[in-house]
Amino acid sequence: MAFTLYLLLQAALLCVNTITVLHEERFLKNIGWGADQGIGGFGEEPGIKSQLMNLIRSVRTVMRVPLIIINSIAIVLLLLFG
Amino acid sequence: MFDIPVTYSSTYKPTGSKHRARAAPDPPPLFDDTSGAYSSQPGAYPAPGADVAFSVNHLLGDPVANVAMAYGSSIASHGKDMVHKELHRFVSVNKLKYFFAVDTAYVAKKLGLLVFPYTHQNWEVQSSRDVPLPPRQDLNAPDLYIPTMAFITYVLLAGTALGIQKRFSPEVLGLCASTALAWVVMEVLALLLGVYLATVHSDLSTFHLLAYSGYKYVGMILSVLTGLLFGSDGYYVALAWTSSSLMYFIVRSLRTAALAPDNVGGPAPRQRLQLYLTLGAAAFQPLIIYWLTFHLVR
Image (cartoon, rainbow over all chains, first blue to last red; front, side, top):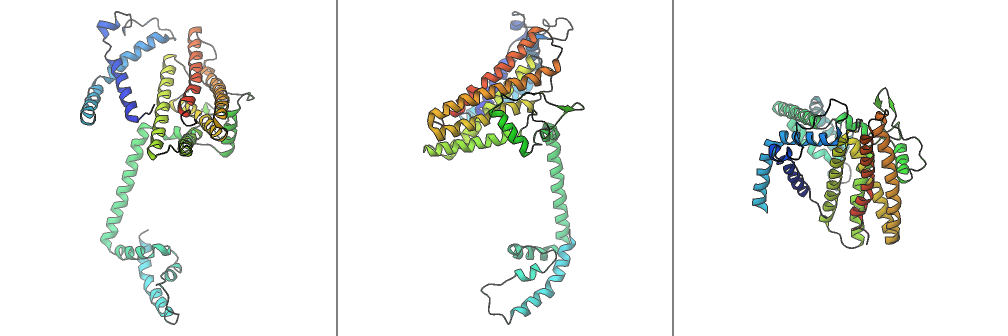
C-alpha cells in the first residue's frame, strides 16, 4: 500500500470530520454518550467511557471552525487536482 | 571582522609588487601563480578562492558596502532568532536534545539489547533527583538517535534491495520513505490515543512513544539484510527472531515505564486496560515489520 503524506492527511481529515459530526442532542444522548451524562463521582479513575466522551466533546469544541477552513481547502484542491 | 579586509588591501600591494619582481627571472610559468602572495599573509584566504576574495576586498574597502554587509548580517541573525523562537513554540528543543545525548557504547549495548533482550534483568529507567538520566548514563532510557539512523538505513536498504532485483527507480525511494513515515505517525497517534484513554499517569511523552515505535526499524533492517543474504527462508527466520525479541523488549520497557509510577495499583480494570495497551502495541510490531518488508524480499 503506497502512502503519500497527502493520503495520510486526507484520512486524518475524514476521521476528524467523523468525530465532529456526531450530534450531541440527536444521537449521543440517545445512546448515553452525552457529555454531561458521564460525570460519575469525583474519583480518580475516569474510566474509558468518560474519557471517550470527553474526547469527543473536546474535539467538537476545538475543531469546529478550523475544520470548516480545512475542509474548504481540501474541496478546492480536490476540484483542481483530482 | 571588518578591519581584516582593510589591512589586507593595504598590505596586498607591497607583496604583490614584490611577487611580480620576484617572478621575472623565473622561467615563464604556465599560469599566474597567485597562491604565493596569499600564503604569506597571516589572515590569508585559501588560494582557490583567491580571485573572488581579491575582488570582494576591493568592494569591502568601500564604506557603503561595509554598512550594507553589517545590515545584511544583522538581518540574518534576526531571521535566525525568529526561526528559533517559532521552533521553540512547537518543539521543545531541550527535551529533544535529551534523546540525542548518546555515545557509542550506549548505541552498541542498545542494539544488542534489541536483538537479545532475554537476559537483561533491570528494566527500570533510572533518574537522579526526579530528572531522568540521559541515555549516555542509563541503558534503559529511550533515545531517538537509533530510530532516526535506522529509518534512514532502512530507506537506503530498501533501495538497494529493489536495485538488486532490478525493480529500482528513484521515485520508489521516496515512496518507501513516506510510507514508513506514515505508518510511524499512525502508530504514534494510536499509542497516544491509547495512553490517553487508559489514563496512564506516567512520564511517557510523545517523544518516548516515537522512540519506542522507532526501534522496530532495527528489526526491519536485520530481516531485510538476512533475506538478501540467505534468501526468503533466512528472511522468515530473521523476521520471527526480531519480532519476538522486539515484542519482549516493548512489553518489558512499557510495563516499567507506564506502570512504575502507579505502584500502588489502582483499580483492576484500569490496570487491565494498560496491560491490553502494552500487549496491543507489542503485537502490532511484527505485523508492521512484515507489511513494510515483505515486498522487498521475494
